[in-house]
Length: 493
Image 1: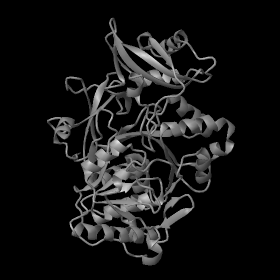
Image 2: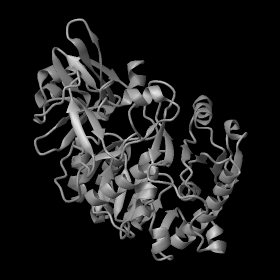
Image 3: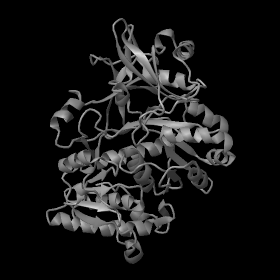
Image 4: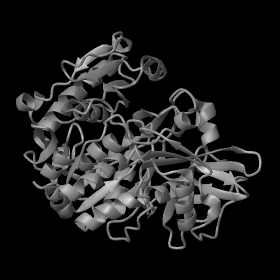
């Protein structure tokens, strides 16, 4: 079995590992605290209990220690979103059947969790038991599950993606190659910890490298300024965070100065509008790198640190990841021209094993020859760069015989000075098949741009057939916890 976190045993014990606000742990303290908790989990397992452990994944130190302890014990962790509703949480608990719930002392857990044995995470165990690292018991193998992460459930109840240890290791190592990520890097972010982005990349990533992470608890531009100004080298965020940064930069020279010092700025979980790319680069001289992944696949592609940071693209496939585009009938697109739209399919060691208790859904997710159907559509350029068009179900609009990607229209709309936020969907049209619908949050609600103005703006930048035919003005776009626009909520409006 390969060791997921060699720095816990081989690195300097006084090296900083985790910091949440004013609380911090060195690698020695983290190894001891996680090791003590892993021993507790293992004892439950020997008693026939700990097949899986739930983690109440608030953005605090205890969550990082809890997930690390589960991995040391060889027991899969099920991160729980603290904002989950009663019905969704009940489904996840029934489906995953954890035997324990790990939580921070003082957390008020909902009634759905009251039937589980609760174990409070003691991050101070390191001060008393420093040096304890691994829990006893049989070591887990590379193909054994590390995490069960539940999808957003946009088309039904959330499905539990079983992520093996090899997927965690290979994704983090591939990103280290692409981003030149080392133990000298200090990562800052304010991402949720129940999701792949904030947990796997944002916490386990630095720990695998032997570096450190400074979690903001709650994202703020002031927090970013402080951390990047005091030694942090990398920033992870989602587009809503980078949009706030872009909005703040003209009036915040200290933020611009701090960002200019960063070695790497990375955005993910949704497409970063080109307009925000350009504003950040103009103010800081730094380019934001984008990458593309999913719960089921972890990371698939990224712009490389030593590559061309081309705004609007998610770079090239990571080492070990096979990627292809296919037509609706399954025919592979072999000529990459930056225009032909196809569904992304991937395969490689970064993939999940199965949907827990859902053999039907698992089988449907893969082709006969083992490629995972992502449901995302994209174009690919001759040099291998990938540009995501959107989700096949919500972002591919078939209008007048054309395949139109919602994302490029959204980017064009955001270049209009009267548009603060924008989303694009399709709706049935008796003549065109589908017509383009724009949902816009105006920059000035008292003087919103009208349809003719925005349609002309898009037609001049893209092509006449891509112009919106319907316009809705909104006060805000519906978004989930990761900042993704919930287009099904718009379509059902």
